[in-house]
Amino acid sequence: MALEEEEVEIARFYRVSRIPTMVGRLPDGSKIPGGPYTALQFAVLAAMLIGLVTTWGLWAKFGFLGNIAFFLLMLVVPVYLAGMAKTTARSPLILAQGLGRFASASRTGTIDGLPLKFPKPHTAATHALYEAQPAPTGLPDPVPPVAPGPAPEQPRRSASPERRPVTALERFQAQSKGPSR
Image (cartoon, rainbow, N blue to C red; front, side):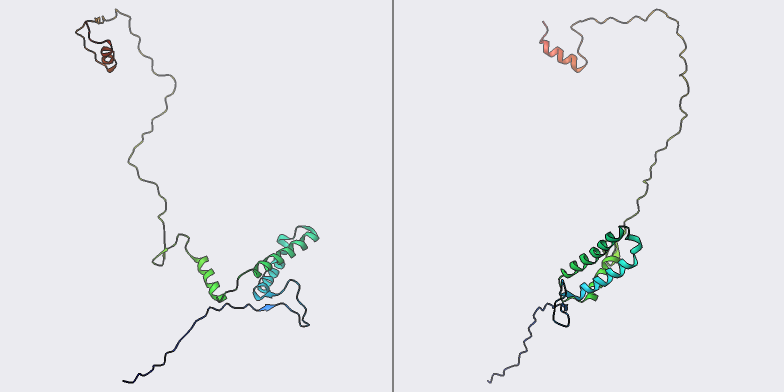
């Protein structure tokens, strides 16, 4: 039996990180101060420059030198932070799509693609009825006077041995005295 060799195609995939396009040298070969800069830094610089110039009247209340210092600070810090952003092999459109989904997502989450809705709070029903009674005004009705008469005669209690203790305290006292002699 002859062995027929099959052609096997081997595919290898390597993770490649994109090297960002850098702008850092002038045509004569000298370096740009603070450079090299990425395209993202230029985009941030343009956006901040347009934003600061259009809103000048809102924030320019620090005097001439204060306004210039604030303007430069608000340009330099975001551009520096944009330079620290890691460059990956992701498309900026996919990043923008993810940001859009995050901004438009339901705060409570979703179940089966539908936003989760909690029921609105409501007052619980009760079956209690309250009748309004007028508040008492003045003093209560006087009690009719009773003519004093002889007090009813109370039967006398005798400490006879045949009387049994009724309350728990009396039973306890009877037990502590011991057997009666």
